[in-house]
Each structure stands twice: as C-alpha cells, then as structure tokens.
Length: 163
Length: 141
Image 1: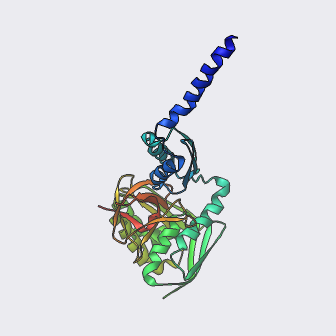
Image 2 (image 1 turned 180 degrees about the horizontal axis):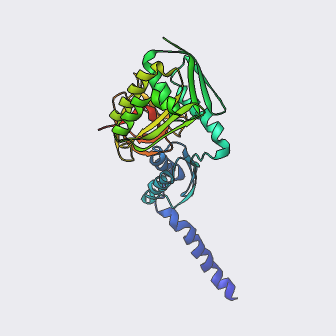
C-alpha cells in the first residue's frame, strides 16, 4: 500500500537525480581531451585518456619532477571539466652502472664518444680502447679527451692515421 | 716508475702548479693515469696542450688523463663548443636516445645536472630540456 504511494516519488526523485546533472552544460570528454592534450604537449612520451571527466595519464618520463608537473598541469584543468586524474606515468629508471656492467658501460661510452668521428672505429678489449681509421689533426685532442674521460686502462691511437 | 713521470714531468708540474683539486697520479700496466679537477676550463685546456706537445697526437697511449672542470656544476651556464654543427639534446643519456632538441654552436645554455661525466642534463633558453654530451659543453667563466 505504502509502496504504491511512495514509488512515484522515488521514481521522480531518481529521474531528477539523473536529469539534473545534464542540465549543467557539462563539457564532453572530447572537449576535455583537447584541453588535456595541450596541457601535456610540453612533455613528450605522455598520453591521456578521458572517460567521463576522469583523466588517465600514461607514458614514460625521465624524472619524477616531469611526472609531477604533468599531473599538476592536468589537475589545474578542474574548471575545464577534469573530475579527477589517475597518474599512471612511469619514471624511467636512471642509469645505474654496476661493476658487472662496467665493460658494457665502457663499450657504450666508446660508441657515444666516437659517434661524431665517422672516420674512426674503436674497439674495447680488457678495458683498453683501440682506435683505427683516419681523423683530422684538429680533432684528435677532442677524441682522446672524450675517451680518457671514460676511465679506460689505456687508449691506443697508434693505428690512427692523422690527416 | 720514474720513466713515465719523467717523460711527463712538465705536465705533472703544470697540474700541481695549476691547483688541480684531488690530483691523482698513478702508473698501472705502463700507463700513467692522471685524474683531478681543474679550477677552470682554461686550465684543463692548457694541460691538454702540454700533453699534446710531449706526445704529439697522443699516439703513444702511455697516459690517460681525465680532468674535470670545477665550475661545471648544476645551475652553471655552459657554452656549446661543437666544431660547427648544432649540439643534440636527447631524451636520455646516450646516443641511442631520441633527439628532443638542439643547441647552436656558441649558444649559452644552463647545466641542470649530470647523469654521469659524459652526459649532462641541460636546458636551453627556450626551455628545451634533455641530455647532451659533456665534451661539447664548457663552463662560462
């Protein structure tokens, strides 16, 4: 009996509850997505997905500061329709060379150091860097100091032809 | 022991005289290792000039000299000293990392930090931030 009287009221109330939010001009997810896209544009590697105003951030950045600054930038869009932010951004692990990877680190360092000297080839064996090829005289100091800075046992340039 | 130190006496004397911090000189397997921190980029360059005079083109390979510059600290201004090209600014420390920006030769940028002796985190005046090869950066003094 009572239920019959109350039921229309409940229906009305719930209808209102659903209808009312739509009365406000709520920005669509696409609108929010556009705003978020420009906020995160400064940080390459980060992407955002918007679902009912909830922004989920994903991607990889180089530092915790970058992660925090992107999150803040998106959080600042609360007035633009962002309800909440789920920050799933990962911070790239900083390079941590250990003793076991010291050899690889030296090889990688040699690759980096010789990149700008296309005429030369450098190989690493037992901590000794051996360089072959040709190089302009004006560049030999730059090359040698770059290689010495890798803390090798020795840098052998005796097979290098100086142009 | 003395032979190598004799050969490079001028270099070692200059290093001592120039106030190189934490100067370490030791001979291992026939190679004289010289490590330390120069008070300025100029001092570092002078040492390399002396080394190059004693061993032209560094062909003998009996020295490994690793001298850093004391003024190259976070927050310092550094000049891009490439040969002619722009300096790559990369996402991470390594030439396998994607390039996120460039700095022109002679441009003065900010040293933000160091990933290691080779790769420094820098920021250009346009706000581009990333890692560049330390060899091409010298502190402004």
